[in-house]
Length: 219
Length: 219
DNA sequence: ACTCATTACGGGCCGCGTAATTATT
DNA sequence: AATAATTACGCGGCCCGTAATGAGT
Image 1 (cartoon, rainbow over the protein chains, first blue to last red):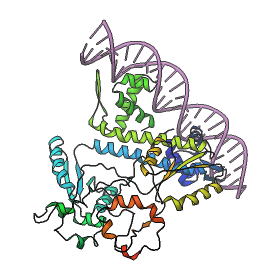
Image 2 (image 1 turned 90 degrees about the horizontal axis):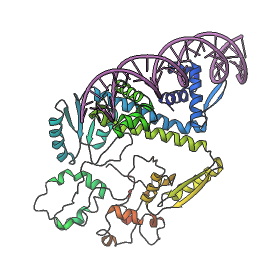
Image 3 (image 1 turned 135 degrees about the horizontal axis):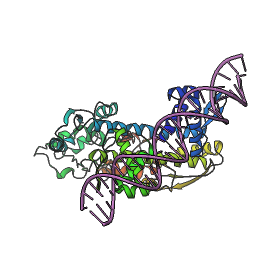
Image 4 (image 1 turned 180 degrees about the vertical axis):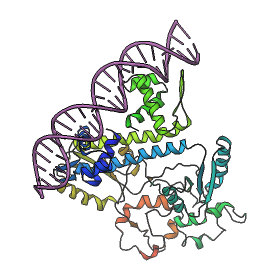
């Protein structure tokens, strides 16, 4: 199986017409036909149902199309990565940071980059919401983002940089006031950064019960 | 760029020795050398640092290795899928279900399969914990699992089948007893299935405050 | 009769293997 | 001197394009 085979498969599946597909692939029909036939043999599966007047995906073909496209997209990803590496460790990396999690990691990163890759310019960009940063990543207008564990998306690579324990700290006797308003999700996200400096008059042991690492447990 | 190029790259990167790599690839060194050189040219990046006595990955090479392996693994995934399709819509699909989420989806699925793919035998397997099911999926001893949104893993494909709202229902005046013991994560997972049948004597409006869809919000 | 996919066939390119070369330990 | 990677070179196969065939509307 070759990459060109998958490209041919994808284009024919899109056009459902060997002539147009061949044109799109800058080749003539016969080799394309042969290529598809060969791919079908190597996979042991018939991909298209063809009568001389019409072309249609078989059931097997439609089930294989998505994985095939996946391979193709990752191949171009490799090429793009290589290109950007070749373009040089001589460029600009655009980084978004959202929330408190980046406050420890960022200075470490910038210092390390400045030392080992002096050609790299870091362009930092504060982002209030995690999702705007993720969207920009997908668009390609950002290269990297620091964020608290969002729902990981298949198109993005993520790595855990730091595990934080975030405490809920309240004045004595005020828990009853807060608990009916703040259920966990909104509570943690809204106040996490503000929790960085905790005034001394707030008692800590009081709330140790509800303190739990954000690191999502089972589930 | 061809798949064989990536295989060659991966094997040489693993062996760091053209001779052994060539043997592993069932070919002689010279063509392998040429292949790597050609790949390097097509990517515009030098992958290996070679002096006649030693071979080492360059920085670019090490950064490209993982994506390259990813492509390769997905290629074999395509081949495996094709093989299993070719083996026939005539086989056994092993399905695990954990938790209450599957109770609506399962009968719908089994009925549909029995009608449209009568050759397929479904082998159902109850799983108490989501993670045992996921592990079995990765091993290959299961084909499919129904589970409530776990941390999605890159190696697994997932799809949202159903969005549930799960209510916390308690007898009147007992909230104070439960709140210090059950913080959100453990509470939901432990009692979710039991929540299916709610005795009528439990009041519902009482807890509507803390009721929230499990569908993970932002973060 | 016309369109579109397949088969037939000849030519060129690419990749492999063997043999020779170079460099390093 | 010996090992290991690269260059040199001849051969075979695969893939492409053009031409001819067949099938269905």
